[in-house]
Each structure stands twice: as C-alpha cells, then as structure tokens.
Image (tube, rainbow, N blue to C red; front, side, top):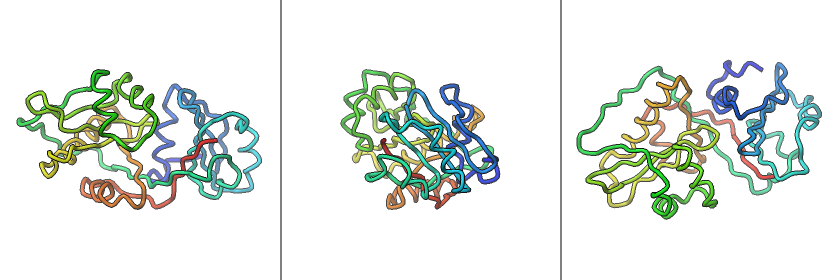
Length: 226
C-alpha cells in the first residue's frame, strides 16, 4: 500500500513501518495491517472494504489487543470500539523548523524521579504504567527554570508527539510553543515525520498545531481496546 500518496492521512502508519517492534501482517495495494508487539496493538488501514475478510484473517480478536484504525468503516468488524477514542492526524510537512534555544529556560530529559510529578499533572492517560514506560524509555522532556519543572512534552509509544503539559502558573510564557518546536526539531533531525493526534474537540491543541504549521487530516483515526 502506497502510504506516501497521502502522508497526512497515513503519517502514523508511515512511522510504524520503520519500527523494529512492528510486524507487517498484511499489505496489499489498498490495505495494510501492522502489529506493534510492545503495545499489543494492531494498526489498520483499508481503502477497499472488499478486503475486510483478508484483514480479519490475520488479526487475533480472542486476546485483549488494541486497535488503531485509519478507516472508520472497519469499526463494526472489530471488538472494543464502543468507547473508542477518535482523533485527527496533524503532520508537519516542512524539512526544518525555526527553533532557537532560549537562554531563560532549559530543556532536560525526565527520569523516573519525575514519575509522581508527571502522573499528577498529565490527565490524558489513566494507566500509571504508561507514564512509567515513557520515562523509562527516555521519551519525556521537561522545561526548567532554576531547577523548577514548568511543564513537559514527549512521544507516545506509537511515535506521535504529545503529553504536552504546561503548569497553570507558567502559561502565557510561550512554553507550549517552545516545547513543541523543540520536539519537531528533534524528530526531523532523526529523519522521522513529526506528527500529532488531536481530538476534534480539543480547540487549544488544534490551534497550537496550526500555529506551528502542522496540517490536519480530517479523516478520523480511531483507537479502541479489544
């Protein structure tokens, strides 16, 4: 499946294809099924619903696997979609970003000692083990002033940018913009696509993505647990 023909729609899948923890279970000209082993999650896209049987033949619905689908028409065929989370892909399409290091703050990788801090302030995920995994894998960065952490940002386990939190008392200092620019710059230097996934009703996050030049794709991406 030529995912590059619509990078905004399939940026999450493009990133996963180069992940060593991902198995490619099925790929035709119009469908793809990837399985990320460390997440126990299937990532699926299908442009021809006549291939549904082929897709179902390579997935295991008997276990509590997760599903992330770029094709909403697949929802009736998969378990755990009743309370699914919906989002849009936002992709940064340029080759570089104007990121300048500020001299009034410092960005540092967060370690396990910040577990309680992150857990207290990040409310986008209700699994404490997830926060632990982000810290243990070196995928969270904080913005500091005089050893005080004012907020943080990181990569989700499937590669999207997110987990952005700026504490209330430090808002309106441009830190959210600064932190996401930092992560976009880091992602580009790694040769990867900088992308985020945002709920359609999250106006503040959508505004930030648009301000930074990320382009939205209004195709619904759906996350569910089998």
